[in-house]
Length: 165
Image 1 (cartoon, helix red, strand yellow):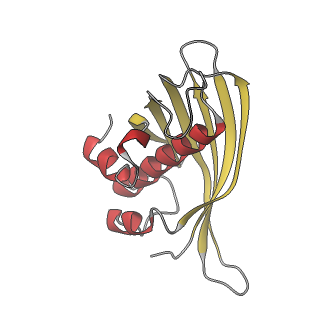
Image 2: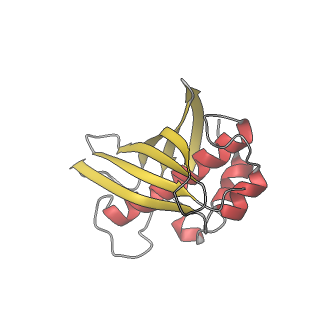
């Protein structure tokens, strides 16, 4: 079930018309946290209606889904990598210290942006310490979006969590 208060807090940095994530259910399987989400984009925040989900909105939705998944994982102690984090740590680092290092999307069929679902998994989260740098968390993720028809988009993203608590 969606934690409505947590979702509202996670989406606080977004302008009202850019809050696309409507609900999210987070689970853990074999030590990996994942989310199943519902999205709605009544009107694009930056362009005239294209009639389908586009790459900019895929990225915005990914961010919202990822932020909620990480926040819920911290709150519930799910997965690995965030055991020492508090929700205060997450919200302090949400914008400045969670970086998308790599992002790729493959559009299989156009997706109706007015109503679609998304799934994301934190495939791995590992602590890394570069030779001359500060420790960070390196996370590999997978995601996908689908609509009620045959619309589909799949992707992968690599995250870096810097300035660890």
